[in-house]
Amino acid sequence: MERKVKYNYEFKLRCVREVLKKHQSLNAVANENGIAYSNLKRWISFYTEYGYEGLFPRRKNKIYGANFKLKVIQTIENKCISLNKACLIFNIPKGTTIRSWQKKYEEEGLAGLKPKPKGRPVSMQFKRKKRKSDKPLTREEELLRENEYLRAENELLKKFNALVQAEQASQNRRLKP
Image 1 (cartoon, rainbow, N blue to C red):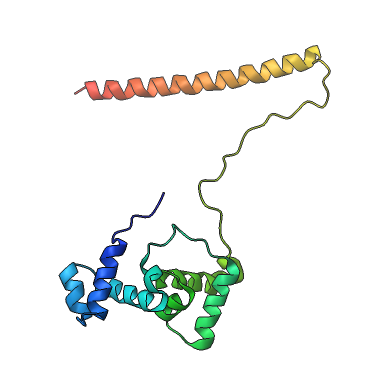
Image 2 (spheres, rainbow, N blue to C red):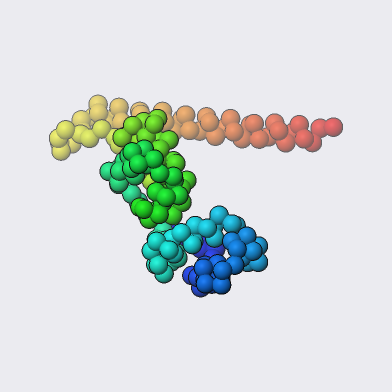
């Protein structure tokens, strides 16, 4: 599922040109177009750094490797640069992405930067113990298997019966004043 792009490329380019070419203030253009000042500032930064490509919508949920994340964090620490400057240098859309990497790195170390599996985990499948040979079951084994099946069926019926009785009791309570 793709992320919803709120502002299209033409809109971003028009806003950036109003600031850079027509020399209007950031606040005036932001208020006039109903956008956040910080968004406009970020668009201008990416436009000046990467040109027209800086305003194109990003690919959906880009996955960065652990080495890249570590390189970004170390560059910020070693060169003492801001998150916004690091976003420009490494072409990362938002500073909050880097900040989350920093928190994970502080808490878990390098293991926190490795990509985690996404989605719902595969549910466990109950598997009956396999027979060791293809020999037909002995009479005793057949009886044991049938006994196991009947016990399970009996338990299921008891639970169902208890549910029906509980439902009837709750209906009786509702009917009585």
